Image 1: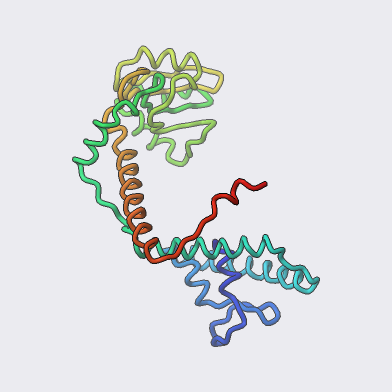
Image 2: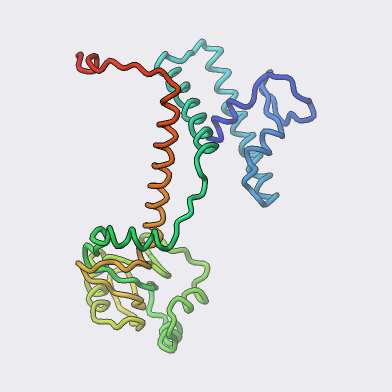
Length: 269
């Protein structure tokens, strides 16, 4: 989107020379355009760096674009249609943004009603556990003692491993609900025997030394509680409201247009 905007926004129209920050032959890019392209950044330092990257990218693209023109390269009819379709999609989105509600209000009653009507859609497909998790390469005695004296594994993690990011290979912190079937067998077996709130470890597997705190355990076949699926339900209701509003808008608009179709041609080879 940014690059498309740059190509579309930098033309040979007359502008104040004081606003031009870069030129490639007669093409140019302005500081005003860069300000708009980086407007979502609140930090002046980050914004300045982003503006520079956009400018450098524009220079590279403009050199390649002008080189293609010089070699007589052109777009095919299909490629031209793709550009037209892309511009059309942008205008459609702007139109919908103008005419549709940007923020749909969802009441607690609507959430509860939806949950009651669709309860069977929210079934745990297999055993899940809400886990706080830490994995170490070595059996660190100091950490083991600190965890042994703590009732909050997440607090220990945030205190001692604040600079470590959770990754798919080495997940740490609050993992949310995790399928027990994807965990190492020894770790999953220990979790199944734990009481909610307790911490166990170190549990050694091929991945290292694990510490886990069990926040909740849900067996396959149980219905998920409302607090677990509330955010998902809110998004579903918002999508429903948007679709209803869009359907009403389309119904009103179609009345003002002459629409002709010939379905028989669809069957032709």
